[in-house]
Structures are given as C-alpha cells and as structure tokens.
Image 1 (cartoon, helix red, strand yellow):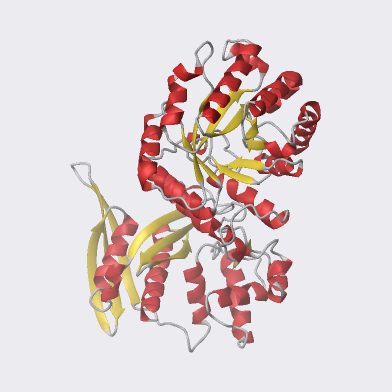
Image 2: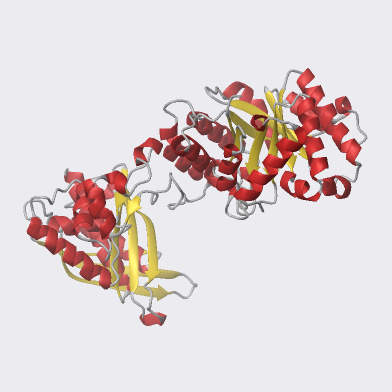
Length: 526
C-alpha cells in the first residue's frame, strides 16, 4: 500500500500550551506543509471549533494544494444517536474535505467510564459512522484513542475496534499512543500481537505518538519497521504536554536512514525553511538544537571534530546538511584548535590557509578571550572582526576613537526613570560630543553614539538594535559578577551578533555596540 505522511499540526499541534493560530495563520501553515510535500493535512474540528469551521470554509477557495489532501477531524456518532442525525457528523460533511479522520475509543475502560456506554454500542458507533461517511464519498481514517493502553488492559476488545473500523471501510486504523507512555519495543510487541490476533495487514495501520517518554519519533520509526505505512506527526513536535512526534525528524529518518522516499522529489530540502517559517507563525522561537532542522544540528565545537571535517565533512556529519536545507557550522570556543578557526574563517569568507602566523595568533587570542568569559559561538560578527584585525590588508579601521562616555540614570518625581548618555569621540579628525536619552542605559548609549556618528556615517540610520541579552558568567556571583552581553543588530536586509564582556554591564554593552556598528559599517562598504 502507498505510504502516507499525515500532518496534524493544525489540530493536535495547536493544543500546545500558549499556542493559538488565527484562521489566516492556519491557511499559511497549510501552504507551508504542502510545500514540504505531506500527503494529508488535518485542518481541525469543524462544527466543534468555530475557528476551524471558518478555516475549512475559506480553504475551499483560498488553498490551492499541490501535494496534500485536506482532512477534517471529528468523532464517531454519539451513543444512542442515529448517525445521520448527529450534528457533529454533519459538520464533517459540511467541511467539504475529501477525507475525514474520526477519533474512536479503543480502550474498554474509556468506553465504559468516559463515554459511559457499552462495548457493543461503541463498536456500533464506529461501524455506523465510518460506513456512512464512506457512502458519502469520503476517505476515512480512524484514530484509535488509547490503543496501546487498551491493548494492555483488554487486547481482544482493542483488536475488535480495529477490525470493526477497517471492515466498515476505513482506509487506515491509526494506533494512537495518546498518553505518550510507550517505548519502541512495546510498540513493536503490540503491533505484532494485534496483527497476529486479527490478521490485519500492518500496512493498513497508522501510528500517532505523543512524546511523554521522549520516544515519539523512535516509537513511530519502530511502528514503520513493524510494517505500518501511515505516520502522523506535527511540525517541530508541537502538541499537548511535551508534544507530538516531530514530523520533520520522522520523514528525514524514513527517507535518509531507511531509504523510503516518503516525500515527493525535491521536497526534503524544504524542511529547514518550513520548520522556521511555521515557528515564526506560531510565535515560538525555533529550537536551535532540534534534529535535522535546528541551527545547531550540524554545528561542531570540538577541535578534533574540526580537524576531521577539514579532511571530509561527512566524517562528523551523519548526513549532508544540504539535503534537508541546513548548513554545517563551526563554533569557535575555548575548545577550538587551528582547524576550527581556519574552517570558521573560511565559512565567513576569510581564507587563512596562506597566513599560518595569523592563524596561530587568532587561535591563541580566541582561547585567551574565551578563558576570560568571551564567547564567539553566537557572535560571528565579533569573531570576523577579530580575524580581520590580524590580516593587515583586510582589517577595517574602527569608525571612531573613544575619548570618554558617561551614563546617568534619573528617577524623576513623577516616577519616570530616564537614562541619559554622553559620548566624546574623535571621528575622521573631528572631536564630537553627543548626548541622548533612552529607556535604559544601553539604549541611551546606543542613541548617543549614533548621534555622534550620523553626519559622517549616514548609513547608520539603517541599523537598529534587534535584540539584547545579558548573561551572568558561570562561577560569578552577586552584583560584582562578570557579565557577557550579546547584541543583535539588523540592517540592510541582514542581521549580525556581537559580544562584549566586563564586570560592568554598561562597559560590556559598549564593547558589543562598538563591534556591532563597526561590523555593520564595514559590510555596508562591501
């Protein structure tokens, strides 16, 4: 049977705490998932959630999907209600999707205690609803809720639920680890027993895993290795509690590790773009350490790694990063050796291969600064300036020379707190004094420096402070702690990060700000 990749980001993934999609958001996410090449996109629960009803209404005219089929999600008919009279079932039909997913109780305890009905009535609810929707021309998937817990409690009844759904015309019966408590070996054992008990072909089964044991992706892969040919997941693993199986990790593992072409040709390389775009829509910072798509997924820190990578990148990368749309990065830290510095410099467009003495100086300087609390892992711009300073032909001059700066914080009678900064600098032979206010000491200092430089460097108007982070260095305590400041600056269609370290947070910020402006002005001249 055809392998099916089924996404439930817009329904199950939307249950993540703090996440709320608008209808416009849902339409945008659906387009991104279609770019990835998933086979099915579960859009939500029409009739039960007004926003989802609106989504399906708009999707009919606003979504042009190239790869995916839109799916409406709902439940089987209620106990004691004829299927044609159930308004929730009618809502599924009104959504107008080619396919429908039904959640059905597969654990006898839930049937009796949650639904408060009989085992026989639950089977009838499944049979009636599936057969009715199939007769209406819908493709039907049945999600067996609490399958694995139900199988442990009463395997015969759980088997009967699966048999009933498939006999009534369901395309796949999906094994849901609703509580997320399974381990891969337990998933394999349950599937083996279920198929042996019923004679159901494993290919007619699906897998939906929650991540409460941090095994959701592993459990899904185990199910596929047991013969399942339908997998469900969510973008970036979004979902209730610890989340769902990360769809990106699932499809990358299936395609790159098991050699199963589960996505259309050319789609796998869209993973990083789609992952980060969906994170932006969800207003959730991308997980830098996420497998395959995270910024750190192919980042190497140890000097030993860098030495090997210099010979062959695949020696320390489990796959070529480009196949999922990612890049390899070399992190420059106190663990860096000459190879790390050389590779990182090359990544930034600076070739140190012909400058062995400069390479040694830079490596030693990095180790010395890192020992004092500096970190270049997330501050490529500061590292590039350091490298250029050791290359006479490429070293950019600082745009100014500091004479002094002063920062005041005033708590006014009306309760307002205002910061004021004054800088005295020399720029292009001219002594300049400038004063500015800001909502904090660093903001005031930044504004004053820009005022002082504006006449000589009008391109500064394009730069803006995008982010500011302060870290107390490990082992430092109290108000006398050494602080590390990271400043992210944006301008001219790009962004860059610089670092400063000092016991005084304002001085640390000053170092980072000066690097930020120096780097930005240098790039503007390129």
